[in-house]
Image 1: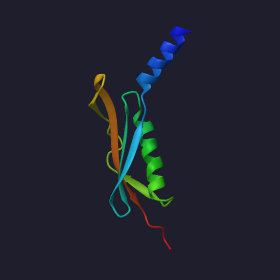
Image 2: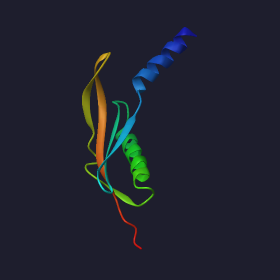
Image 3: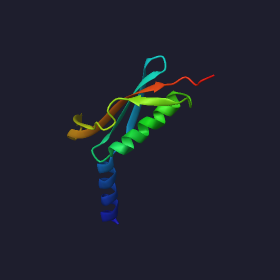
Image 4: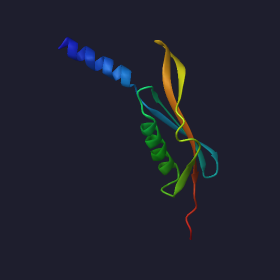
Length: 99
């Protein structure tokens, strides 16, 4: 039982969590950045960005600007020391619907 609990705790620590933030940089334009552990895939971060873009644009069509293939790993200081973190940031531009 102790081994199972320890394995579960280690798995949760390694997978980490994902945080996606949205900042409006101009009317109808949003900078969306998704942060995760090194175990988060680029596709997963891109999916989080698409979900936030759809919500920020209130269901209007949008397109993403930036390099969707970019995947930058940076060192983030935590209480455990330097921890590798994956970051992907793109700009969402909301499009006006044709009337």
